[in-house]
Length: 224
Image (cartoon, rainbow, N blue to C red; front, side, top):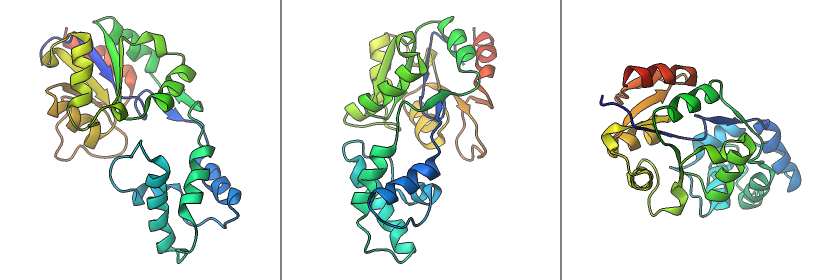
């Protein structure tokens, strides 16, 4: 790939992870509405349909909970009420850096401007950045929820490139999602360093595969 002049990062699952016990959060949501819990967080995530609707988070979770309720014979439960309780229980400030974040940010800043491209809404994602203490370190932060289309559409990447005034072929994107980060960055003409979890890349072809952010500076030196 060409020399890298700028680096963009995904946020959730790339630079940070939640520290809340999501099973406990899930159970408290049911307790708040006086219902016995059914299912669990993994079942809910699997039941959610498509990318998050940040304009209607309660409706998005409510629809997923309705599918889980049907699987457990609990369709009489007011899943929108549970969803409202669930959203109120989630603390967006309860996040921590993934290993190697500081090393990656320092290495990226050494080659040029850096930024974040995230699908989440400004209020929630800014809370996470503030809690992590990294808000002021980025030259641009693009919130996909504020745009007509979010990742994997090209719009969030295009906005970041425009604000940084950098060439897409000389910009590296770092993310953990194959469907949203790798596909989206490739759609926009960026190279990708995929932060691998347990899955295989399958049909996706990221230029780089890393198991930790500590590996990023070596990639940047290689492309320099």
